[in-house]
Length: 147
Image (tube, rainbow, N blue to C red; front, side, top):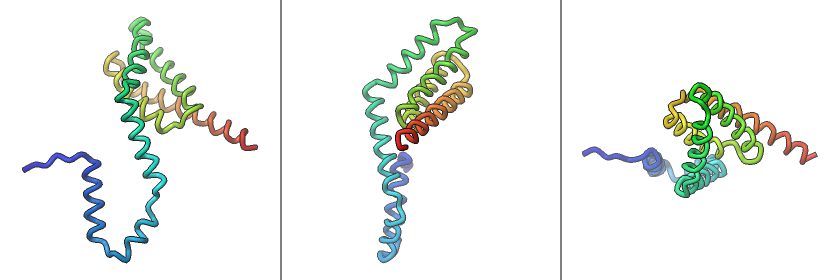
């Protein structure tokens, strides 16, 4: 029989299996080397993203962005989509953390690409550049505030 487990369950079962096989005296050292803050951060990030998704915020943002793109003529849609994603991601990343924002926007950008029939690669590059530029602005603001 075939068992269909998600990647999360597979990782969890593998971890439990390795802990069972490990020597009890070595477990303390293993737990000491785990970066708990990183694991908790990503766990919380995925919980927040699932909550945002279930609230329908992703659908709403995607729908609004799609509506703006569809207002312009077909020959200008890619340009407008790139500029819109670049500016929105740049401004938003100046105020909120890059990782959760990018996680949310990747889903929105792929939906826009599918629904409006635009190539995905330029939209992803616009997201990457905008998020990076906004994140740099946020770092600069933090340095100024700390001085």
